[in-house]
Length: 146
Ligand code: SF4
Image 1 (cartoon, rainbow, N blue to C red):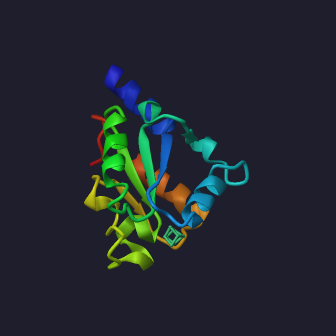
Image 2 (cartoon, rainbow, N blue to C red):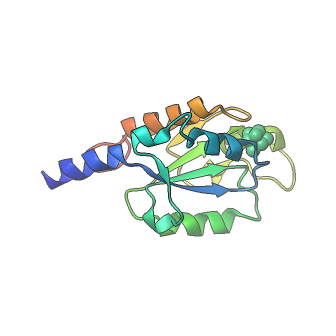
């Protein structure tokens, strides 16, 4: 019963912690737009929190370049289990326009276990909300995605 209640609550209050992992800021602006009253992510319980220790979902924008890989991994470790990773934008999904550059990463999944990808350069706020909803749809009884 307690497990069902915690899963129910988890699916209705995804707290997000955002990391700009060398993004150009385009994806970050769209993420902020998704959280404004116009798109109203709070109707799904999604709010931005200031600490990874309070978060359920790590939202990453940018290429996860070599300069930020270790910091990204350290932030991920601070999020309590069960935790999820949402990669937002073409750069986070696979390097985007920077793929192949000597100083850029190849996407967040080379550093962290990504649960959901939201492609686009940048993705629109509706697409980001759709990604959050799809991610919540994967949350099962043990709190982990299927
Ligand atoms: S996907 Fe496009 S908008 Fe987003 S960080 Fe990369 S270049 Fe910028």
